[in-house]
Image (cartoon, rainbow, N blue to C red; front, top):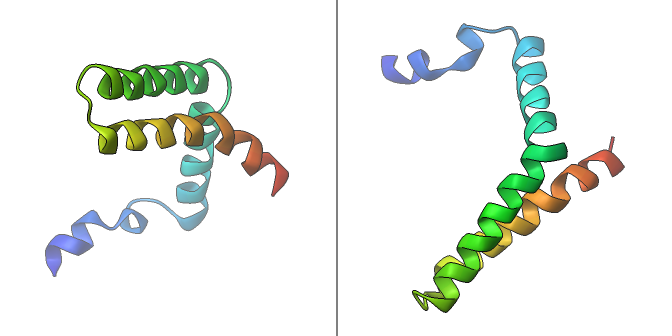
Length: 80
């Protein structure tokens, strides 16, 4: 039980600092250059696993990750 208390981030941050940290991280990753780069990398990996490895499950995972990274930033902006 003590191990889970050690992992609890609210022991080290206030609730507002924690929410602000994750909000800033998501805005950094899901907008701009990094979102495009990560999305293109996931898209390339998905087609690699489909064409070369012929592993459909990993293709679907990477393809869905590419779509999520590409569009979650815009969807998040709608619900603000």
